[in-house]
Every structure is written in structure tokens, then in C-alpha cells.
Length: 74
Image (cartoon, rainbow, N blue to C red; front, side, top):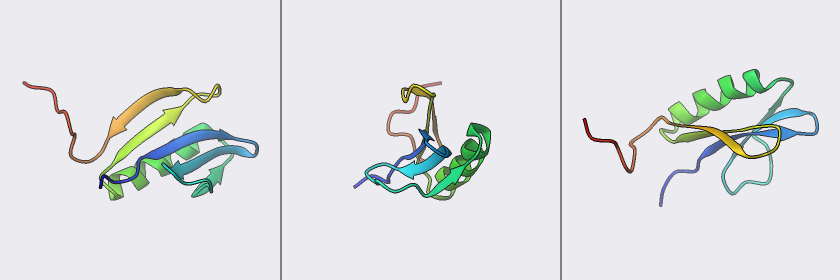
């Protein structure tokens, strides 16, 4: 079983940090930058992926902080 991804998503009160499969936000912040900073630390501590969503809800950036299942060669 793989570790849950960390998502930074728009929220009615600002920006939320959630783990995949969870309905409840881990934390809610006023700005996306604050949420990204916290989300990055959570992803690093859990050696998993951070997915940053835009205001439209679509993933705009993805960073891996653990073992990558498909690392590029070279």
C-alpha cells in the first residue's frame, strides 16, 4: 500500500492541506503559499508526493519527496 499523497486545494476559507482519500482538511490557511509550505513539510516527513492545485481545482504542480516509483534515467 502506497503512502497517501498530500494535496494543497482551494477551500472556502482560503487554502486547505489534505491527504488523498480524506474529506477533512489537515489544516486551512489564508494563502496558497502558506499551504504549500506546510504541505511540503508534511510530504517530506511522510516521504510522499505533494500535489498543488490551482484555483480551478486542477493539479498545476507535483513534487515527490520520497522514493519515486518511476525515476528518470541519467
